[in-house]
Length: 113
Length: 111
Image (cartoon, rainbow over all chains, first blue to last red; front, side):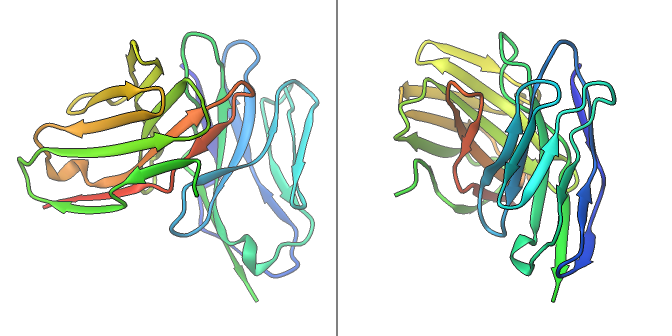
């Protein structure tokens, strides 16, 4: 079945550091790929998405490129802020009859001033 | 107001009790979902519904049941709660773009 693997945390960085959170997936066909963010005490919210190979999703300074050849969707940000501290989830969607998203286990990001 | 609203937000109960978590949405989406979040395990799908007459089991449906009372309402029930059902539960809806829209979560503790 489909699966998503992302780097385990917590990941601790200093403010203004460069961020990469790795995400790889296993799926048949051509899934859509997502990054969700969960701030403390809140539900998940969509950060960015890509629906086909070589698409780049971007939002709030975060970027991720859908790499079919490496089955990856790594999340990057050039300069993180304390307010980026949260849990980040990589997910895929096949759509069709098997519905819902398949999520990775989440990566807890901690940004120190 | 939130587009996806869950009640209660927090609940503590005892083993063997019946619990219902409710979800309502104003997004007009047909597809609704219940997920469970556990530390280190991410989110796992419990049940999902394509419309009022279409209910489907997810990855971990044992011990749970659902009811889709209307397009806007989707409830999750634990008929006889047990301690390993202690978790954070999320309701979500899905639009045509494939994006899920989540509620703020219901934290359930079973003693």
